[in-house]
Length: 164
Image 1 (tube, rainbow, N blue to C red):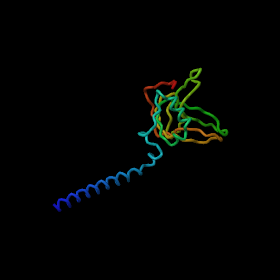
Image 2: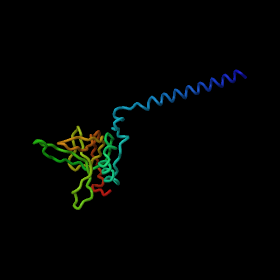
Image 3: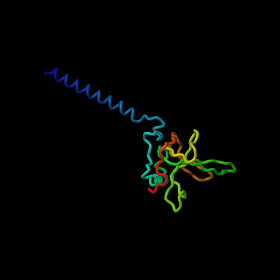
Image 4: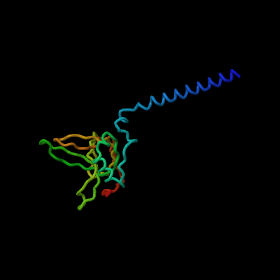
């Protein structure tokens, strides 16, 4: 009988040690993340701006910027560029947008400026972008843009004009 009690206690101890080892193994992985995951740059964890709620979600990002800075955002829209002069030098801004509600078609655009290290597509191309929201300062003003990790031209266009 005594041997059976020892065997039972040994089995419990082994089970407890195995459980403890599993917990420690899992806990060690919880704090570890790659730099791209810790700053929100993984496409799998991206915030999707949907077609149905495009205007609402985009305006929420502009209104509550601090909640979204450093987060990865994915959406589709029209690619466009705008040229201007900054400190006497020509500069081109790129954006991915949709048309919003307004009195005249094309008056209001909704989207984000984008920064991409590769070649941009043609104007008016329908694209899907994935990027991290960041702020930058220019001539004393702060602006938002997406630092892109992905830019794909799509064959099928979505709604160009959104109301929500």
